[in-house]
Image 1: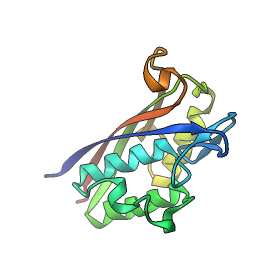
Image 2: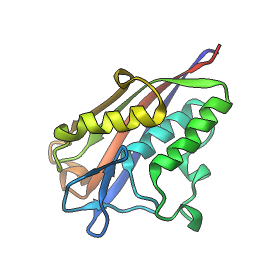
Image 3: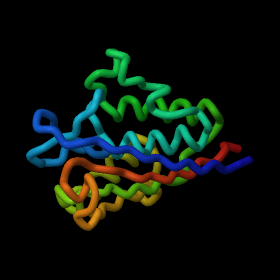
Length: 160
């Protein structure tokens, strides 16, 4: 098999005492996201998609929230670990496509920076990293502005 597709999903609830970080970029907003690490929900969903594509389990398998080593971790450093796993299995990232679901903050002004941050970290062309933002039309926990959800699809290709 020369291609692998993975799907990732993550959610985090808002909190008052942390910064909001998405794709390694700090977004100016009055709330951050609650989590054991830096709670970068976008990077978490991407890593989950990558791990799924290679049948390597979930984020919790690799970075358990019960392990104090990962408390406050920079998710981009965790992404580096997942990227090493991808390379060690003989694959490269072809592309990744993420949808961030949030009522607030409005993310369009930050999408280019987020894409650039992720592309640089993954060592791939910007055109291979898609980040979109949408709302949930005021429905559910996202609609009540309780948190952010992210859906991600990733395509990996075996190196020749």
